[in-house]
Image 1 (cartoon, rainbow, N blue to C red):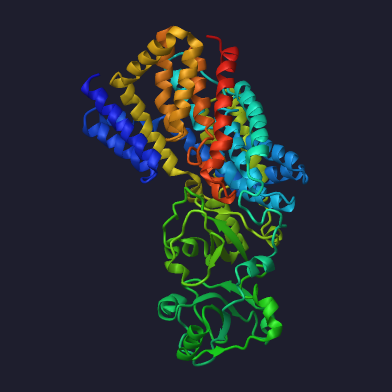
Image 2 (tube, rainbow, N blue to C red):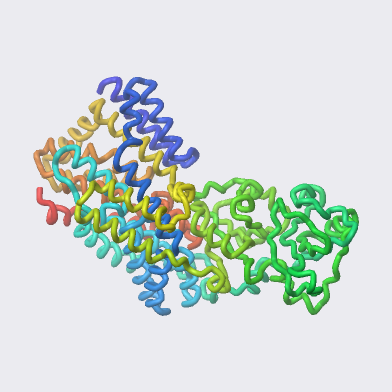
Length: 621
């Protein structure tokens, strides 16, 4: 081993350790590794930046935009919702339907996006069927990853091995080259996951509400005790706050209270406040004469606020108590919903006041459910934690926008009234046509695959499935893009320094004497093991050249070895942090680390054994 090889492998090992620890963002780790490779003269600047011009990276950007159009128009929700309604209330039938629906969607859009859109649907259907959501959510995550093995665009590792084989001049994989092998993986994986989850998943997964129907607004409000400490004050003539925006009143700092809503008359001809238009209180809301402010806080603080600002504290009559839990929080335009903070969210350890919910979506956070308890006061200074459920209030359309656009939260508790208030977009058929056109272009191979994807991405914006380019950019997971663009040069460094050839030679020397099947098993399970600790894309980028070199040294067909890399990188179930879908369902399903080990590890190992035996049947040595 030469010095450059030792430096490269040391940087790779350090990056892998940081990926596994999760203490530093994965894209930052990739950029730091890239900088070190340039500073230590392993790569020149052109080689270091080549990853960001790679067709895989450009294709990923296009696919994020296409997927954003599909989610934004409600197409994915329509398709999955209709499929899931076929399942009825039988748990086994529901489980099979959930897995097939998520795997079908996962074949065309990212597995993370698939789980994000399916999660609230599966939770609501589970509750309606009297089944614990924890019985369905882990299979949902696993199925989305299995579905990605069906097509070229289903998962990034598929595109990585296609690029590797093309550069080596071996073969060019088409859109459906992955389908036969992926279909076997999906069929066997579905059976394994259903059997294992039926017997090994806890019946309740810690979810005490598994058998409840979907909650109404009244029930959701009562759960968070919204009627407690809710008071109404009116700004009469002469009040000191008239004409001032709420952000200038220092309500939280000075009084420890929160204004959830400002209501005013819709017409001066109508003296009654029953026909008020609800306006969610934002920082720039200006108080007007006769406005009624709904104030959340303890009575002494509310009383002090009313006295010092010369406001009238309105009486709370007994007859109004029943309505008070939703009055001031919900109407035909305004609603409340629960939002889950998943394990990989950027909001973890972030103060509520820095979340951007109010500034970006005009949503107020009314309460936090944490480990069975409820936090209802002084929320702005509270730090959000993984697994927190936030009760948010805002316009129905703002809640829907949050659900569609914000990748770091999942709206899981949207009550039944929201369905009538947030209709699906009429652009869904157009999004479906664009997606079908993209698939047809890729199958027909009229243009290079990356060009077909970019055409579809442009059409999503041009046809109004995404309102503008700014919205299109928001759909892209830039952390993933930077990670892939930063790790591709790492594979170049591994090859350039001879490390790939050395590792390939060691694999051939240690396993080659046992035959090509043993070498195939070595490549598969080495990739599978590493993917437990770093992203599947990074694993595929690193192992693709190693698998290619090992196959060529042994003098056999490299295609099955490259397929072993992409399958092993995509089928990783044994730990919750191995893939974003696994992490996304952990809190919602109330899973523990050992739940993944019990279900995911045997499924991953058994499926790996089967795929090692099946691959030579499709791609002979």
